[in-house]
Length: 385
Image (cartoon, rainbow, N blue to C red):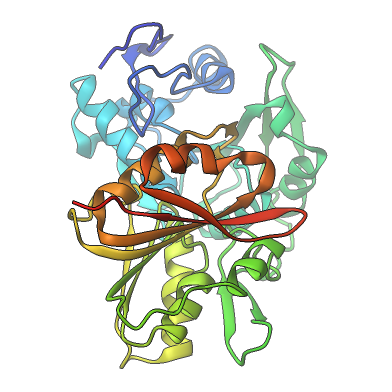
């Protein structure tokens, strides 16, 4: 779906493809691909020499640009992002390509077989890259070509170090349009360490052991924003349904469940690893007798109107490497749609983000629950029907 002001046509040697980002926005200003995608596809066409029928694995394809352009190879594609997978499906359909021309896998699923080429976009979280490279080991052979692409600003020296430690020798391309490619050659003699993920820590002030998969925010310890939020979580015996929106490892929802034992908690995140972590943490802490819901998805889009009493949220202010407030804004709008009369949305954020402006525009009332020098907790009440 083309939108005014945005050129959404990717032109590469493999063809021309209309590509959209998700979530869809009426006046989208960002493309669904970057210069690293173009560089990688150009390289494969000019120097890659991939034979027809080559087995290709793609990791971290942000909105499906690589999968769509290379769909003729019937690649497998791994992502930790629900939105990335959905965008791939949307963009395949939008270009008249069959959905089953790409096998989509989440970050905790293993691909099938050994690959001739592995194409990796550098993820924002380098722990995720480390976890992925360790999971890849059974699917590599000495001849496997591993090509890592990214924008130079998102490729610190640690990317090279991880590749050389876990794969083998690396060489690099020249920079082009602020993008670069790294080529890694599997070393059959490499000593592969055990995968350190998931990691675990004991939640402060409790006996709960918290599991964190590689792509979970603040996986090694409780972050200071969540610690502040936990100190002020509401207790309300009339609440029936609570949503931990953008749940991460689920610590906020877990403690909300402890303090509101009559309520059902719904854990929602677009990261497969986040929801897997939240599920494990809730089950270990409260046992099978306490019910909760776990959903990997696009925010609150699948919730029915008037279905939730309380939403707890620490909105992300980036999507992959792009920074902005569009995700938070979308979360707030969806929260208003699904809240019951008198329901509340509790939001924590850095003070400078100014979430109160959007909340006051969308909700009947917005007040400060607590604040310190870095964070503010806001409470927005649903408008009466």
